[in-house]
Each structure stands twice: as C-alpha cells, then as structure tokens.
Image (cartoon, rainbow, N blue to C red; front, side, top):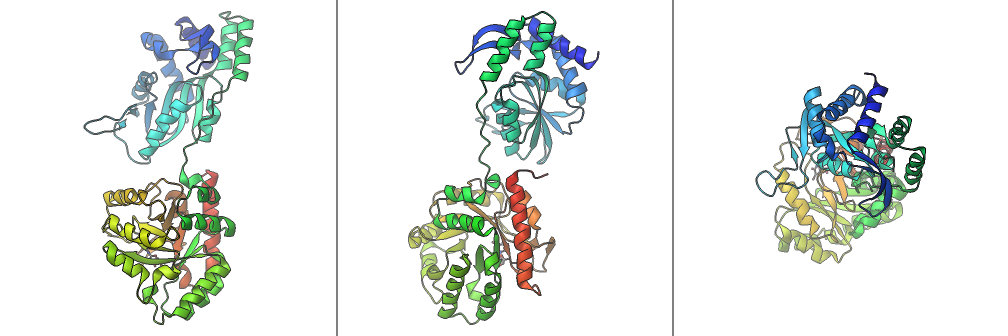
Length: 473
Ligand code: 5BU
C-alpha cells in the first residue's frame, strides 16, 4: 500500500474507532472545542496499532539516526514497544514518578551518556508532554532532538518543540485529517470549517524553554545573580565583550604590572597567586587596583583557602597580604565544610565574592563526583557570597546567576609535565559550559603576550556567542 493510501486508511480508522470525534467538547483548560482526540482506545484495535507502527517505520523515521526509542507515557508506550521490536532498536521507558524505593530511576533501560533517543507520542497540542519526557532524558545525558507523532493538532506544538531544539515529524496534521474525512464524506464541509476556525483562534500556550544557563546571555544572567561580584563580572563581560581571565603567574611585580598595562583592555578578570611574588609591596597593590579601575576588570586571588573558619578569616583579612583589602574575589576549597564559607561571609559584608572549587583541571586529582555535588549544595546556603564555581563540567551546577570559571585552557589541547591538562576554548565553552576562561602560560609565556591575549579573547568570545545562539552543531 502506498503512503497516501495508508494515511487515508489511518484517518478513516481513527474516525471509525472513535479515537477522533467531532461535535462540542470541553478541553482540560475549559475551552470549547469542535474536535476531540482520544487515542488511548487504539490498544483495542491491533490492526490500527499495526498500521501506525508500519507508517512510523516506513516513512516517518527512515532518516532518523537514533539508538533508542522512548514513548511519552502512557498512550504512546505500546506504540514505542511495537516500533522498537520492529526496527530492532532498544526501548527506554520513562516513569512519570521516580520510584520511591530501590533504584529511584526515572528512565528504565540500558543506555550510555550521549546516546540518541527518538521520542514517540500520539497527539501534540502544546508539546508540553513531549518536553517532560525530553527533559528527563536530557537530565540523564541522552540526546533527544526528534519526536515522531501520530497527530499534530496544529496549535503551536511544533513551534514550541522547535524552540526547545526538538524537531517534530507528524504522520497526520489536523488539516490533513480533516481533508481526508471531508473527501470521504465522514464529516461535512461546515464541520471542517468550524474546526479550521477553531484552530486559527485557539493556540496552545507557549512552553517556556527551561532556563539553561549556558544559553542565557551574560547581561541577562547579571540580573539573576545574588552575589555583587558575579553581577559586576557578568556586566563587565557583556560590555567589554571578553570572558578571558588572565592568570598572571609571574614572580615580579613589575612584570605583572607591565603585562596588565598591555592586556588590561582585553580581560574581564585577573587572577593572582599573591604568595609567589618576590617583591610584594603595598605600592604593587595600589597600582594593581588602579589598573583594574582604569581597564574595568576585577581581581581574583587564587588563594584556595582550605583551613578551619577561624584561621581562614585571619588569612583573608590579616598578614602582609591582607587579601580582603584588594581582591574582589577569592577561591576557596569546600573541604573543611560550612565553617570556611561562614568565615568568608562574615568578613565580606556582601561586597566580595568566592569561587568555590568544585573540580580541578589536573589529572589524578582526588575530587569525586560526590564531593563536587556536596560542594554545590554547600554553596546554595551562601547565595550572597558565592560568585560561582571553579569547575570543568556544564552539569556541575544549574543556577544561571553563578559563574563557571574554568582553568586548564590553551588553543591546542595538551598537557604540561606536572599534571596540568589543557582543553581548547571550543571544548570548554561549547561542550563543558565554561563562562570565564582562565589562561596563564598560554598568554604569559607567549613572545607577544598582547597579541596572544587578543587571539584568546576573540576565540573565547566567538565560542560564547555561538553557544548562546543555541546552534551548537
Ligand atoms: P596555566 O598556565 O594556564 O596552566 O595556568 C592555570 C592557572 O589556573 C594556574 O594559576 C593554576 O593555579 C590555576 N588552576 C588550574 O590550573 N587548575 C585548577 O583546577 C585550578 C586552578 Br582550581
């Protein structure tokens, strides 16, 4: 049977078994509708089930590349099952509620991160049910970018799904269904035009794309930030069009100041290790602050605090370095627990920031996924203090008001001989979710540091603009 004949057959069968009804009905949201779909009944008609599976298999999904199929619960589950068996692809099953006991899994079945999953659904109105399934699959690291459905009500679902990066293919659209039924004298012309009017006037509400931090521009994220330094950094990045942080790992204060004089206009943040400077002095700090003011960048002291709260508050506010005096933000380990954040918070008066270390770039480091997760949870208790995380992965945290600071970056991926691992700007920004990128030797050790800083700045910003455009492939 050719395609058109099969489609006609499907439309007529759905009408015959009362899966499609015409008259006057009330929708869930209390709107009157002249047409009503209930495809749950198809399980009672094996020949209709077979026809749908056939159509899905033969036509709708010939050029889809996928590793699994997953039906949107519940109506599409048996259809997905039949299709999975027919095309010999594994099926995944999404629970509507996670099990309260045992594995607590939401997605059942075997899969790997990065596997592609084809979504199967019966009817799409707004696309919200498809998105619930897509979001659960994406949380597991699966790719869900295609949905094949039986009936498109043509009320905005296609656009909503498209906005969420899901392409929809439908066996039948509402207009197609109506025209088949009119041609075959199942419904009158008058009913057909009533349905068309209804479709034109009643659109499904938009399904808001989830607030994925990696797609939100920095100037918007500034509004979502609870920490004053994060807010400033987002705004500086947006204004200066740079997300480059220079790590000035030099031991002479003159060298540092000379370098910043040249690259200051290209960076949003400078990162220091104050304790490696041979000739530290108060006048160095004064000059550093002046440069920061002149070029509009902030200062991060990469101190990596890791002691009990009492000691850290002394390290932060006392001694020859008096870090709090000149650094806008500092890095800190979470290892000692809450006390360290409490100490930094007490000393900060809501004016300073902390990048909490959730992951490291060097190979063989002892941080585990559990440690990272506990670190992110700990930060949630100090929203006014936390600027963001030093981390390597986009799934480490979700809050769009926080900043992902990622070190270990060079134009070419490589390693040094002491365990540092370098990724490329493309990898860290597009794949790993980095917002601010820390570059040290990639610039500091270059023959022409200024020219190299411009190359980094342009490359990093290009990756960022590509990322927020949402067109990653
Ligand atoms: P590099 O020259 O680009 O390798 O310098 C990277 C800087 O970032 C350096 O100052 C490190 O101390 C810092 N860093 C890092 O490389 N990796 C990490 O995981 C953390 C900090 Br946390």
